[in-house]
Image (cartoon, rainbow, N blue to C red; front, side, top):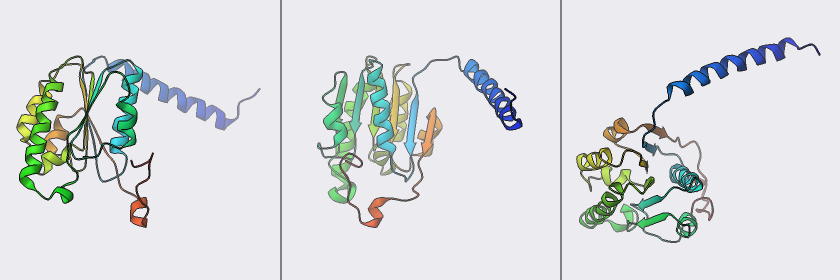
Length: 201
C-alpha cells in the first residue's frame, strides 16, 4: 500500500516528536520529593490535588490532607478519602474569612493547623501531603512565610507536597518544582447556579 504525502509527513513529524520526548525522558534522571503549587482564579485546583491523592493511593502510598479554610466536613472528597486506608485527613479551618470576620481567631486557627502540618512534614512515612487552600493563611499573614518555607525545605527528601489556593506568594512559587495557574474563563456560579454535589462539593 502506497503512503500518501499526508501520511508520510505525519509519520515523520511523530518520529521527530518521539526523539525529542525520549531525549527529555533520558535527561530526567533524578528522583526527589516535589513541591507543586496549583494556583490561579480558575476552578479545579483542589480537584487536581485530590486526583494526585487518588493516584498516590493507587501506588500504595500513605497520604495526608490539611484543609486550611474549609470548615465543613461534608464534602465528597472527605467522605470518600477518609474511608480509605493510608489517609490522614485534617479539617483545620473554620470557614471562609468573610464568614469568620475575626483576624485574631483566623490567625490562631491557622497557627494551630500549621503545628499539625509540621508533624506531617517530619514524618517520612507520609509520601504525599495536600495543603488545601493553603495560600490564604500566607496571603493574609496568619502564618510566617519564612517559617513555612523552612519547614517545607527541610521535609523528608522523597515527600511530595501539593499546595492549592489563589494568589500563591512569589517566594512559594520560586521554591516550587511545578507551578500551575488555572485561568477563570467561565463559571456556572456567575450564572446563578449553586455549587453542585460531585462537582463543587
